[in-house]
Image (cartoon, rainbow, N blue to C red; front, side, top):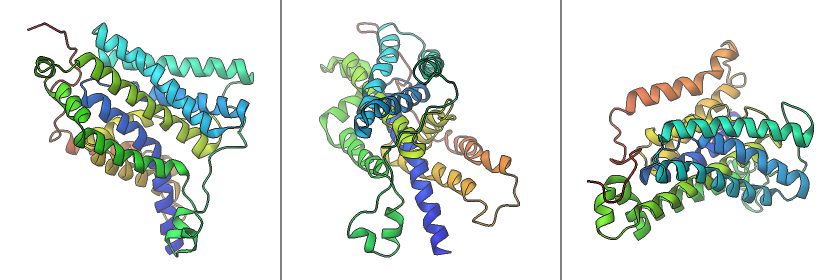
Length: 310
């Protein structure tokens, strides 16, 4: 039984990892006042380009770096349209999602001459036992099943909390998200802060995509994000736009998915698999229905800022 519990916990942590990166990206973007619906599309791009880079260089960590850079470049489309052109942020995000899905499908045909999925890469980022720690009972068994992405995600939560709540930059971000005009009057460049936060959001979502492809199945598959960008947004709202809250919400969603995967091991095999596959999405709806009414978004979230406008 202990082995089953460890397997479920390890599975939950691995499944929550892409959500953690993406939801942290959402926190940065929305704390500055820009709604980032494009997380799903940025994750798709990150998943594809990390596999593409690893395929031709055999350097998986270079693939992660490229995923972050591609995420930044994709997010700049949102930033330019939403911040400078004052376009509708939700519509822009949806358009980027559709563009990313089409672009990666096109490149898949161009590079691999097929649709559906790429070939697996041999040098993916896999779970490895940590010397000395792997000798510790339970902890050693658990950590042996975790990829480096899991540790990076936890580190990202700590760094995000510190940056947003313990640094002058974080104070400026929260001021811009709550009252951009007041921030502007004290000399804070609202546009610059929003651009930086959307770019951070893009980098984190790109890494989330690489955690899905390089860290989970070692290949890129069309539609592999399966709405995880939107689940990450739900986790961000569930966590009340706070890095730690978003992290805990992602763990909750990770556990629901892990239970679905480990259903037969847990003795839940009598439940139809189709129903179990809906559990994470049902959990998303229930979480939002029960909590979103009490969660308060940053006051200027989704509202374009025009300098000098009263």
